[in-house]
Image (tube, rainbow, N blue to C red; front, side, top):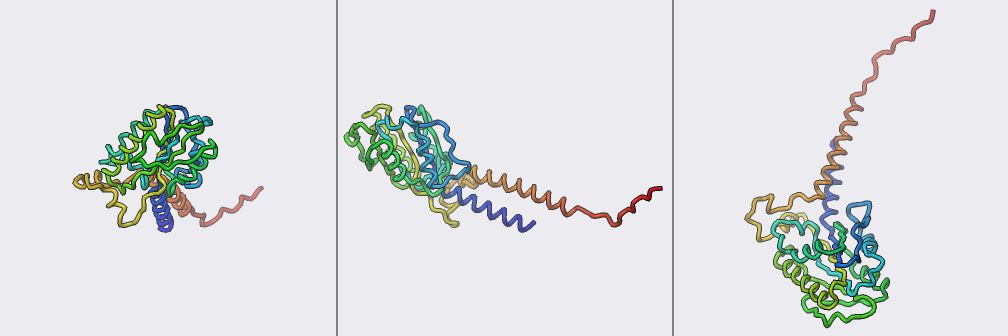
Length: 268
């Protein structure tokens, strides 16, 4: 039984680490350029290579009719950051825009980040367009020159390192970017918000980096994010497997053979 328990704990640890080094991908548009429901993968965490194809399959066939396709790169972002205590105001523009969009889709867990350049190249190849690198802090409507094919723009935001103020500033930059695009092209655009790099994880930093300065005076369960949906899911599966294995082993150990066999009855 100890062997089964050790194996289960090792599986649990590896699964938790797999969730830690993932990034989300949010896609939305005021028009029907994004499929609302897409079969992402049979696994909860999809690989970096599979993410590119999944993102492409999340875009509709008339994606090349959009004027702007902006791929926003927020390094070291995690899905849990959107619901973390103390981070409510850090994604106000992101949540408002994506929730109110006519079409939207989301991939929660992409292992080790999204290959943003590869995604941009695939979209540019499909739409026979070129790729533009824009600075979120200085972009203006003059940078968005109308053309027959869509503008494929890669917009990188500064790395926040779990700093709420930086995340808020980046969210404001995202809002300004969308406002600039809407001023130029109204609602004819697509936003792909993701990250090229996952958060680095070390044993000594796991709990510390989850406690922002603004919430260090809160109780421990409000201060630290000790459990995530992925952890609960893995715990449920592990406990179920342990119960089934323990029950089976107990039944096998309880099997007893008869000490003697009755002789066959003789026929008269």
